[in-house]
Image 1 (cartoon, rainbow, N blue to C red):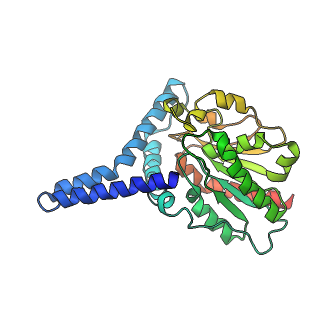
Image 2 (cartoon, rainbow, N blue to C red):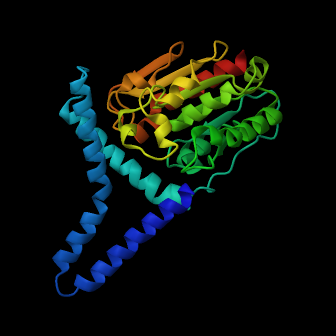
Image 3 (spheres, rainbow, N blue to C red):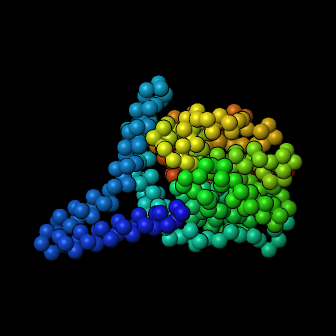
Length: 302
C-alpha cells in the first residue's frame, strides 16, 4: 500500500508541474519556474516545520537543543534523502534489490532488515547492495498490512522472513530495524518463547525507534501511528525488553520525527547517540553501518 501511495503522490506532483508549465511556460516562464520550485520545496517546508517543533519540544522539556547550524545541515541532508527515498526508491524501486542467500549459507549469521512507518523494503536498497557485496545473507520485507492496522498486524510478515533466514543459515540472524520497525520487532519478540527467541534473534539493532513513543504521534488518529503515542496504551502493554534479548539502540538529538531522543532508548539496551543526524539520515549513517557489521562479525565468531 505504501508503494502505491508514494507512486500516486510522485506522479501527481509531476502531472501538476507539467500542467503548470504548459499553461504559463510561454507567456510567463518565470511564473512557471516559480510554480515548479514551490512544488519541489513542499517536502522541505514540512521537514523544516518538524525541525522547529523538535527544537520547541526540547526547549520546553529543558533538554539540550541543537545549534542552528547543525539543524540546518541536518535539514538539508534529510531533504535530499527524502527526495531519493519517497520520490524514487519506494514508489519505483521496491524490488530493485532482491534478498540474498550465498552459495554456502549454513553457519552464517544473516541480516534481516525491517523498515519503518510509511516506507517499504526499498529504503534498505543501499544496505542490501553492500551486504551482498560482502557475501552476507540478507533479507528485507515490506510490512503489511500497513495503514489502518495496528503494529501487531505486521508481526506475521516479519516472522515469515526471519524464519526463512534462520532455516537457510541454521543460525539466528541479526535484526536491524528503523523507526516503527523496531516496535514491530518488539511485538514479534513478545509472541515467542525463550527458546524461539534464541533461535530467531541473535541481536536486535533499532535505529530511531520510538520505544517510548514520539511527541508527533499525538496528532495521529489512525493506526499504526496511534500506537506510537508517547506513553500510549499500546506501548505500555508492550512491556519491557525480554531479559534474554540483547539490543542496541541508536538515536539522534537532531531527529525531527523521533523526539525527544530519550524516548528512543530501552532499559537494558546498549545506547548509541549521535548529535548530527535526522530521522532517515541516521539510517544511512556510516557509524550505524559499521556498528552493525562489527556486531555481526562478533556474532559470527561466537
